[in-house]
Amino acid sequence: MRQIISYLKKFRENNLSEFVDVPKALPKCHVCDEYRNPYTRYNGCGVCENCYDTLEVCLYCDNRSLNIKNGICSNCLEDSASIHSYGYKPEPLFHRVNRYTKPLLTNDGFSRNGNPIEHYGVEIETDLKRNQFDSPEINAESSKFASFVNLIGKGITGSENLLYCKEDSTCLVEVVSHPFSWNYWNKFGHEIFQTLFSKLRENKLHGYDAPDSGMHIHVSRASLKPTDILKIMSFVNNTENYQFILDVSQRSRERLESWANPYLSEDAWQNLPRICRSVSMAMDYLNRSSAVNLHNRKTIEFRIFRGTLNTMCFAKNLEFVRSLIQWVKVTSLDTVKGEQGLESFLSFVAKNYNDYENLCFFLSRRNYRKFTVVVNRWTRKHLTNLNKLSFSTDNGEL
Image (cartoon, rainbow, N blue to C red):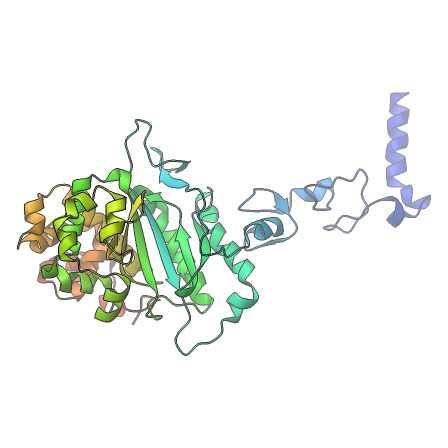
């Protein structure tokens, strides 16, 4: 009896068109254009069971979909399609790598042992050129643009978003990152930001070529002692180091002093040790637009850098902040403040060339003699014609 029933079911499925109006009786698969029974609607795709496995998988939600563009399904595009308002501040997601060098996400910046881990966050201001009044790619398709930026990290690492877009009073679009560790930057960061900068340039946006744009780097306060912050402030705001800070920033004097003033008042210098221990004191004595902003309770912010969409220049800026922090942790306050402070820092960077290749290359371009030898190593390592590389353009080429 069971064999007879099974045979009748198969006969009915295979010969249904002889007895009924098939289009009305069975749904049509959107892939093979055939009327299938049984019919399964997977995740709203409207395809038959046989065709479902042929659909592309969304990089963000891992579901299969008919409507996927650049690896992202239409649902995810809609969910992430937003250039947020200026005041938008999501709960931070701390990105680092585990012992297997796989991406790891946590809700705080501490290790399992409760020790603070040094995390970095960046703000990249982008704008149009002075003589450019419209960017149709951004204005007409801002949601698609924001979605692409928000989902870049997902496509490369398979983990949650690293980046999001915000409005800003000084530029058209600001791209902001969640905190990431130095190991995360070395493992994934170069590819993520290179992809980001290519997309921004495609949309006719500029960093270096929009002179009022800047790049800000945040470092987690928990990973720094008050004495570390004091040394950083003493070095960056030392008038003897002004030309060096101006060189590294790549800004003009006018714009550096407008957006990231490296000068401290006499009262601020006298109270600097207390200022570095207290955010409320910092708010009393320092302007938010100082070279190093201490107004934030969870981070200190380096504001000196000119905007850039150049991966090599972006890496140089990160390496400067990283090297400065590592140097102050092993250097006395007297040395940092003294006449040999800058020389000591440059020697530290040159000695640790492998960690700061882009910074060394930049300093050699600015005629800091100590770095001639290490740049020759760069040439041999990368087999690159250095004359074609530039820190002063958004695409990194002359």
